[in-house]
Amino acid sequence: MSMVNPEDRRGPISSLLQNNNVLGFLFMLPAAVFLVCFLTYPLGLGVWLGFTDTRIGRDGIFIGLENYQFLMDDGVFWLSVFNTILYTSVASVLKFALGLWLAMLLNQHLPFKSFFRAIVLLPWVVPTVLSALAFWWIYDSQFSIISWSLMQLGLISGPINFLGDPINARISVIVANVWRGIPFVAISLLAGLQTIPASLQEAASLDGATSWQRFRYVTLPMLTPIIAVVMTFSVLFTFTDFQLIYVLTKGGPVNATHLMATLSFQRGIPGGQLGEGAAIAVAMVPFLLGAIMFSFFGLQRRKWQQGGQD
Image 1 (cartoon, one colour):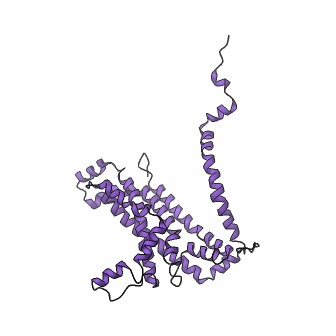
Image 2 (cartoon, rainbow, N blue to C red; image 1 turned 90 degrees about the horizontal axis):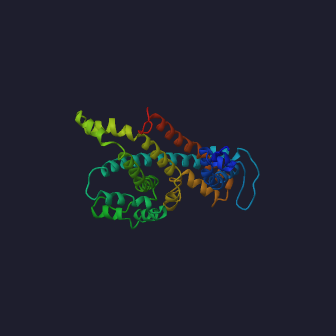
Image 3 (spheres, helix red, strand yellow; image 1 turned 120 degrees about the vertical axis):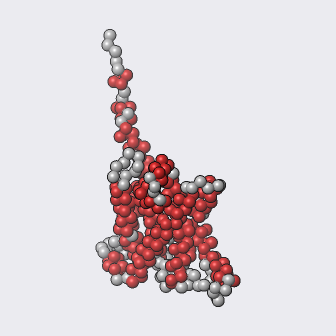
């Protein structure tokens, strides 16, 4: 009497479920459906609207590249591009520099360091609108605590017009964005710092390396993958910032703080020009792809320390 192998009795479904590739696909399928419904479809619709003259309350017709041709000659659009690049560049650099400094400080053996790490997260976890409203009061032309303090010290003679002057408004919104973004950078880099073996730092110290040399040749190379990922997300968050700007200035004064995201909203919703607003949103894509490529090449330049080779 021959014995039947239990594996031979398995049906086709059981056999498929034993395949890791099939099982992985099944686990990813719900997320893929979610992304298609709530990301791919709206993105595709936005791209299509950019090629039409659709307005609120009226279906549009296909007009080709007319919206983009109009934007090429639109001074406000190019001003928003300049503002977006300036805002993103300055804010991202400041968030990285201050976040790295804060991460290295929190990585030291400090008393109550767990408490300080929790406190650092507060600006990040507070809703953006609430943060923007707080800064709106801080920057108020009549009741600003900054202006009051400087006047009490005799450093200025009158209140500072933070949000009514183009230069001051740009500086003010960048400061607000940096305040909100530092915790994300700091905590992420702190997590990376804690993965660096202490033996490497000790070996460098025994070899006579200074603090700067240990940072330059030990810490920084090991942090490169984390920095690439963190800065990519930081740039993406900053480039697409909308709530902070819209609550504080709504793009003013005289379009001085209009970003591409806020201009797209203004043209598309209050202005009713859905096609033009969608075209501005689509014009943001090349910049976002550039940020993603920055992350990709940063990761390729130095692989993660767990078994990776340059």
